[in-house]
Length: 534
Image (cartoon, rainbow, N blue to C red; front, side, top):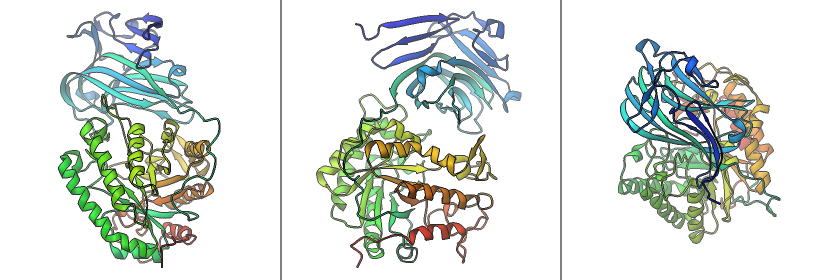
């Protein structure tokens, strides 16, 4: 049988919905506008299931590459609103699937988007009983000729309504769309018949690691105080170049990246004796990826082979450097990986992490290898990640959900959001946080593996005692499931500091302990110290 055999085809008013199993997967929607009449696109001429909002500003035009295309135009006075054409997608065909969305798009004189997610829209709307997701490719303003636009997204298993959304949001200008295709390229992981036997590998013999992330500017005095006065037994050490997610690595050469990394490792070398003295086990976190990230936050090592090669090389070198270091607990391969569309012939994150783990194991058979799922290390991403067939792996996620609460006031986000409370249209309390973390519990149960929460936090100026209550609920859930954890962060940026008060204007540490600091210290008081401490 021909692998591209079409099972059924239904042309409807200028677009084709088809089901076919091809080498790339099942095409669930294809839109090319060729069956529509040229001219203004008004409701009487729309296919019956399409919806335009508002009804004006849409045209069908001849495309220079052949056939017809959609034009969407917005005048200056429309800048605060948007123009959208919504095309339904059969949810049963995409629920629990990974999709590849592709299109041809052109733009002319599009005003600068007020936020990265505004502007030219080729977006999906995925509606579930708990939340609605809006995956898209962020596109610039200005003018650009016809170009391919491609992105990958995952659809929640409980998605019950879905739409393709084309148009302009909060900008003026014109945009043209053609040859949109949505293709299934993968599915959620399958539950194994039985978990692995035996105790899960932790990489340490302590009942629990409880600590925090630290930045490159942490001092000897900070570490001694954290380990001895606070009684923390763990830090996640950021190998961080500049900021995150954007950094000098975004524009650096491989040689420049290596120079920075060596200086960062030398700083770690200087302070590892202090960690031994203070009874602190260290996770070496590659926070800044080789190649950095693009405007969408995607790691460039998934687009250029030179960065994947460098990634594998440096992890072998780091493992050789620390394989005999007792204060190192493990190697966190990459902070919050984001693939985007993986370049031809390059490894996916699943494949790259496995290869890095194999190479590390060849030179260091003992230290933990810590792996976060793509994208962004989110809890739900573990539903799309398979355990690596390499010994000694610990799986890690970061907990910043609901993001609009934890990051209120950061990068211009709205403030005044209370926890527990209604956030993004849903009630959030401890029970809801447990639901958010269910994919992590499932992964732990299905594969009998150890879990590490590498980051979690709430901004200090959240209203009232909201930050305290969020942190308390998170930690109690982590402890209930036996997970190691690192708070974000200790003596890094003041916004995350538990030693600072709730006034964002006051950037000085308080002389008295905050409720959040007392919470962390109450848990750190339960810690046991590693055996290398004299």
